Length: 207
Image 1 (cartoon, rainbow, N blue to C red):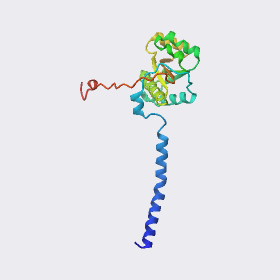
Image 2 (cartoon, rainbow, N blue to C red; image 1 turned 90 degrees about the vertical axis):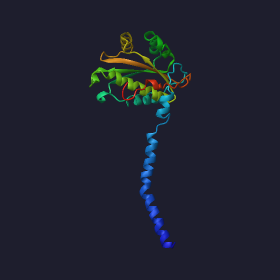
Image 3 (cartoon, rainbow, N blue to C red; image 1 turned 180 degrees about the vertical axis):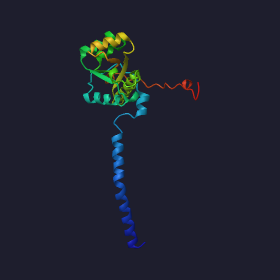
Image 4 (cartoon, rainbow, N blue to C red; image 1 turned 45 degrees about the vertical axis):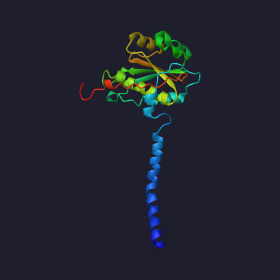
């Protein structure tokens, strides 16, 4: 191969690299930005468990905001996004949770809880706020798990006595309905993952 041929080949290679390098660099950066720290989605779903015991370590404001951001990414009917939230850190308030829901008395030992509620004044498609806020709450549980935190969904709606008691405890307006209280902290227990797949529950085409 002549020196001239080698020079032309080298120039072509350099030209190709120059043309493709920005795209490769951009793709690499985009991939890095699109992949958040923590568990991937499948792992988070399959390993998440309800955690009801917590260490004394605090949950930071940044972690709470990330959980809320993930909650608000949930789908909703007519894209109405009817959710409202109350972040509760006050120990006296958390200690009163067990008086409303005895199955959530451990909230007094958690550093933070987030109440997920439906704002009926934001509804565009009436009645779907329950599904919307449920999807939102599930996103938040998965986000907490992916961040290395433990969390549990404690039920409020549709029990009217719990709805009214939480509304009074947190000074919520009448048009906002408490749906669930998510209790969150650093896990002091590690429940093992469970495979809950039941093939007999799957029907194809027809029942």
